[in-house]
Structure formats: structure tokens, C-alpha cells
Amino acid sequence: MQLAQRVNGGGRHLRWPYEELASTPSRAAGVAEKDERVARFMACETARDLVRNLFNINTEKTHEELCNKAQVLACYYL
Image (cartoon, rainbow, N blue to C red):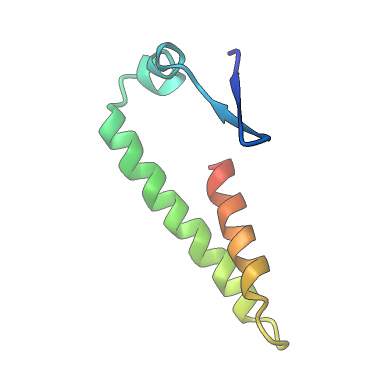
């Protein structure tokens, strides 16, 4: 899969063309786009909860910015 890149305000952002999204393994397996979106949302919510729990067990003051970045990263990799 080739990844299209665009430059926006000096930063690089990744984006996939519609044709590539329409031919993902999920689509080939017959998974509907809506079903996949719901499943990804639920998985992302679980990942964010896990990250928040990890930061909450820390006896020191919670590092909110770091916690937020970790949550975003977890969702990105999902």
C-alpha cells in the first residue's frame, strides 16, 4: 500500500486515498465500514482507559499532557 503525503503548514500529514481504503483487508473480509468504525472507536476507548489507569496508579502527580499524548498514540496505532 502506498501512502499519500501532503504538506500542510510545514507539517507532514498522512492520508490514504479512497481507492486504497476501499481495498483494505477489512473490506475484502466483508467487514462493513460502519461496523469497523464502531469497533475501532470501542477499541480506542479501551486503550485510552488503560493509559489513564496506568497514569492514575502512579503515586506522583499525574502528568496530564503526557497522559493525553499517550492516549493519542494508543489510538493512532489502533
